[in-house]
Length: 278
Image 1 (cartoon, rainbow, N blue to C red):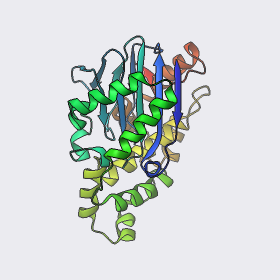
Image 2 (spheres, rainbow, N blue to C red):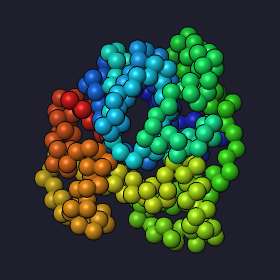
Image 3 (cartoon, rainbow, N blue to C red):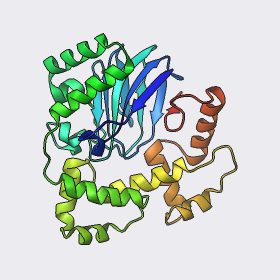
Image 4 (cartoon, rainbow, N blue to C red):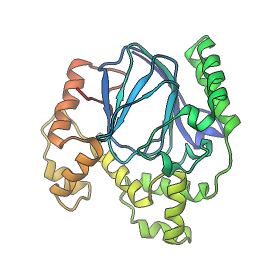
């Protein structure tokens, strides 16, 4: 499976982690994506894919999708083969390209057509399909994003506070953030919901969980009680509840699934966060 990515230049570098190109046969027909503080935009150039959030029925997406910071795992069904270009945003990064508050897309992925309109998306997909290389496709998508960039009220304070949350792995007291920003907790929570889709507390939880899980060495024995304590959870039971919420799996099942991916597809471009859903 081919995967290429690049970091955009200004002014998008403060909003986006990377632009990527993906093509080929997926490792599994259905992949489980644990919740993470990472909004996503995909422009699909192949057959439709399917998305299922929680226990909802799977929904078909032909042109692509946009989703803000999720709070629970979601399942992604790839066509075979698949081909797309996309964007991994910083938590606050998708909002300047949306016509609606970010909270409306939290755990409710929208089609690209719903956010940018059918004629514009059809033209963008046509231009991307005619591009001569993955790099040119990424450049075209970057140019489209620059053209659509718009100012967002409260973006600066949300970015400042979110960065502080990320730098501490979600461990910073949320009350301290509001005091540092000289803003009320009500104002901060409202801005976060509009720009990121979740409250500061929820974003901190997401960072704490993501940092904890990505630091796991799944090839070695794991003391889950020790993991929970070092991550700042009240107890192991609290950690397990959050684990189920964010991945849909128990910690033990998660490790088994990660090991399966590593065993069946070593050094795969997608290894690390997506999990086999079958």
